[in-house]
Image 1 (cartoon, rainbow, N blue to C red):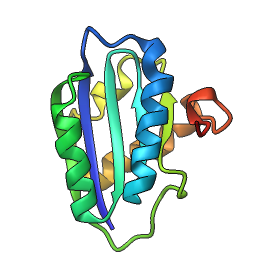
Image 2: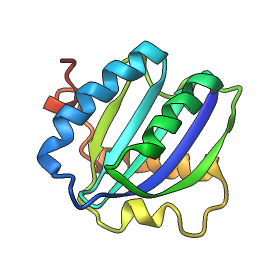
Image 3: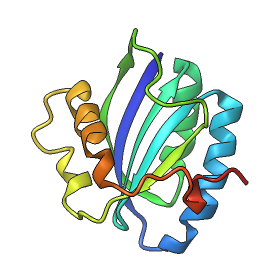
Length: 139
């Protein structure tokens, strides 16, 4: 399993109301590529954790890197893992953080991808990641 974690700034042209459509399209693409992921959004930043076959994840990242909705994309970690997938095969879960310091804070004082991913999973109960939310419903 190949894992990739990045943080980016949201382009000023992107409006939060567009998040539902972005999630639906990304979920469909992830399912086609057999990639699972968690996309966090706070209105100013995207932070995404992806897992899947290395070539598929790298292919998806080439698309994301060219996406005008992202600015200043920063790699927080990548690499192979022997652990099973952290996420179910739904393709993509999307969550919203109301803490404006949380997502940018993930990049500060990083001690490795595993630590950052652990911070994210520890924070999930405080974030709005709900499978019943509109943006987590399949189209």
